[in-house]
Amino acid sequence: MQVVIPAAGFAKRMRPLSLTKPKALIPVAGKPIIGHILDQIGDIAHRIILVVGENGRSVVEYVRGRGYEVEYVVQRKEEMLGLGYAINLTKGKVKPDEPLLVVLGDTPFRMDLQGAMRGGDFIAVKSVEDPRRFGVVRIEGGYVVDLVEKPEVPPSNLAIVGIYYFTDIPLLYEALEHIIRSDIRTKGEYQLTDAMKVMIARGWKVKAVEVEEWLDCGTLDQTIISQRKLLEWNTHYREREGSLIVPPVYIHDTAVVEGSIVGPNVHVGEGAVIRNSIVKNSILDAGAVVENAILDGSLLGENAKVRGKALKLRISDYSDVS
Image (cartoon, rainbow, N blue to C red):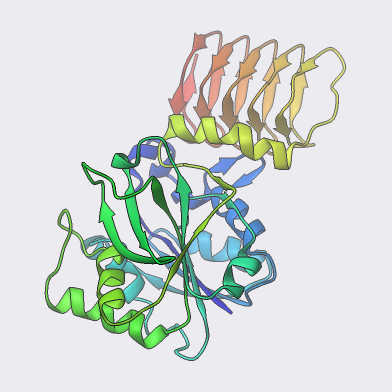
């Protein structure tokens, strides 16, 4: 099987961290966001086609490093025209006679993918309290018959989570080309949901499959919230003499922790240093340094330094706050 992972957006809501690295590689709970997605894909796919931005070579290298056969297309700045447009860019890479899984590159999830695929084409969904904030499916007779973006009167409480399985690949790309050629846009962009409406109108049978977990990493605040759940699956630390570790946490074995309280809900990357500090609900990327400080709800980029402060910070690589 083949997988398309769109991972090319600007991630403005993840700044400043996304200014220096692709959103998919921002660390959460011990690995990049896309790493948690690959954990769920596992060995059910042999080929992954990435859609990356002009700074996305590092995403390609990371996925190849996980053992996958990787092809990619670059979505340039002027081509940021929606998810449907991004997926259409992969047409020359996707094999037309092989099933295709599409997974958004910023949406960690948990579900039985193999079990879902045995039931045929599907759109992954999750029951939510307020579906008006999401794309929502309408179901009749066990099949999805419509998809509605952020409806005032939702036809269901099943939000679309960004995982899709297709077996009729020619029909998918015909529908994508149709909405682009006909300039069918929603909120100014070519949406995959509009293409899937075309597919349904042409006889596509697709079910809704509910995921076990759907974790949002769309903003910095939401990423920290989602990290707590991800740490339930990827906690790692060793005790440090003279310090208190409060799980769940991920603390890289090379990190230095001295005279500090770390946790709960903290990621500490490779070579990071925490001395005489309290850190909770935070992400410290590789090489970050925190000394004589109290941090809560903070994200520090690679090699960023914070000394002598009690703050909620969002600082990018090599920043220095003293």
